[in-house]
Image (spheres, rainbow, N blue to C red):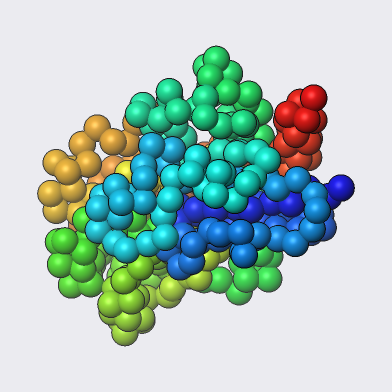
Length: 312
């Protein structure tokens, strides 16, 4: 019987959209559920009689109430372990949404509640002590929308706006305009994350003539095709850019160095203030070969092997 997939996450943390597109091309029945918009329930599951595999990019240690309190939003979030039981899924598979920190320290002990961990790189060797693990690469590179990428304004680089909850607390659109004025004046395009209530920032940037990129395009696929990747704070995007061959730029807004100190890890990143963006950009760009793309065949084989073991 054909394996059915339910791919679940929330907003920008739903890193599984490229995987969903790749699995659809292989003919697998699937449901892609953004918990910011709809609940994951049995009525939304793909039809068929085959085993149901729940693939999540969610945090492993948060209930819905905790997640909504932490993000200050109202969603349909439920812990992935709860969703497995609610959906009567045969497997619970974890594919992380953050390449810079795939498993948080608070989540290590909870890996044993999974049936399979799909790790982005071999640095996750230690996870095998807690859960069956397969190294398949970064999920953001599983599939690319070539038509959309061909028409996207990528030639002058892309600023991936991140840390948006903090930006909103600092003043939202007005703060973005003022703190990144020099960077934006270069003609760089902006990619907003998929996240609620960012319409005022989008409208302000559009009114200023800033080129905007579809938020639903995979950040990794954009990084593969643009000459320059820029961010305004610590983010998975910096790690994804590095995986795509870049030395990215991180433009820290006022007070950003104090707020985000110590969160950039060991990545090769050029740090600057907005007024120093020109010099920083000259030292950034493509500096090495990209890492291999997501191993879809390896992912499917690992899922099938895990299902076979569970059936014994």
